[in-house]
Length: 420
Image 1: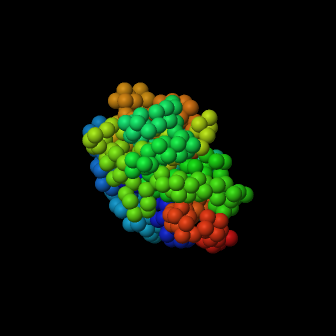
Image 2 (image 1 turned 90 degrees about the vertical axis):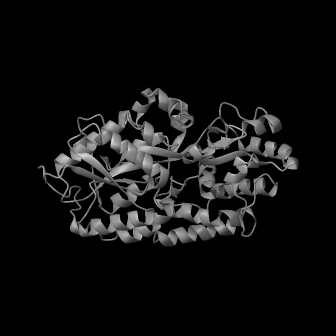
Image 3 (image 1 turned 30 degrees about the vertical axis):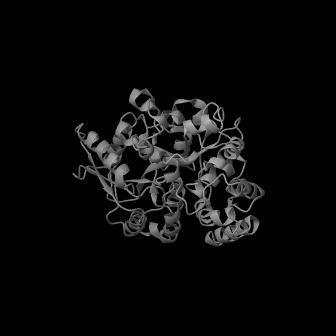
């Protein structure tokens, strides 16, 4: 399930819908002074996470409610398009605003810039919901202008799965301390090609571009403006085209995930959310590790970290907001069921849970060097750049469009979308 960045395309529509959303709510950083208890003992939590992931979140909430808290949590899930449009409409009207919402990391700054979010600061003061108890990069996503508008929940990451049997057969030693370089992937491809084995699978162009672009030193903005037509972006796409032209990567109409499961791809970058699917593979046991790296001595690992936010509402009481913080604090050490989806927790307390630390994805959190490698993009306009690359990736790889001209076209589109 393409969970991480699933809202990127949707965010384009969202940003258009946001204009004027704060009209019925104060824009001075606080929408209310309702400090009493209105008798409603239910915290309504909206989420766009559906399917198996949503079921695991529901089970986690059931576990919390079983602790008999004063305020129980009610999860309301909906598809992404519905989720974003409803958030915009209820906040605009001031009616039916959820007490709590779980949104993608790249959406926090967009909502905050429209004056739609309530800061958490006064409610988390004196609690264990502090920066020191979370993964730094995930916590910082919610910090804007010195205030905390988002509190991190879980983290989805574009990692890599590989077939250890094929590595041993075609390129033993290619994986060193969990790191595979693009150079090694090319060498593996050269030896495996004649047997009809691909060394690299492209399951999602934008995610692969995002990681390699950052590893090569690329930036998605400069001076507050989005940047995608850069020499580094050209170099990034040239690497993917090289791998494709050499015959090391399946074609667009070939399903990389299925080929990997069939033992026909050695290295497959994919999301942490694919763990449960790949654990069903028979014939070999896939290994999860860092996404392929450009420089093994400088690991960069792009991720996303969903955030709990409060949309402004005159109906939410201070007492209920504090009850929401109690729920989020409880989650810090009680997300085992939730992260069985393949995600990682962002609260460091889960490192004390041996069942979690045995999970394959935990390598990103257990090791401090891995934690330091995590990069979460929040650049202005990055969502537009991601969507542009997503739509142009294959045309640039298979030669239907020139890399330089296509990147210029994407940049022009992004500028237009940003009103620049």
